[in-house]
Image 1: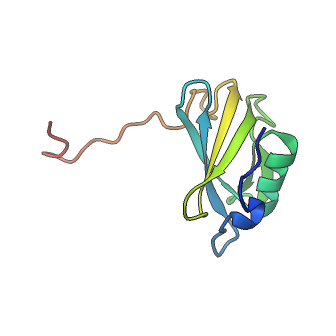
Image 2 (image 1 turned 135 degrees about the vertical axis):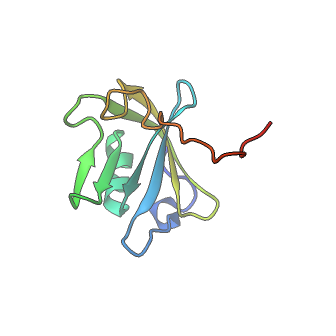
Length: 119
């Protein structure tokens, strides 16, 4: 596993609540699996353990992806975007990622407004 490169944790800009969005992408197929939020400690745990940790905004607690379902994410690398305020976690999924049992949390298309999205 590779850590955040460059400045390390100090290179990440956290918002006023101390959070940064973290997009999880499968290294197997390139698909986006989920979006979660990490604070500094969740990111540190992710880098230290090789499993993906988040901060639950609703529960106000740390959670490790797969702790209840067994469908965990093996970290391959963590990248920070050009502004330093968003993370891309490239991971190897061990089972479906979504709590619904779907491979990805992004499976519900939104309808385009009438007349939009032409061709």
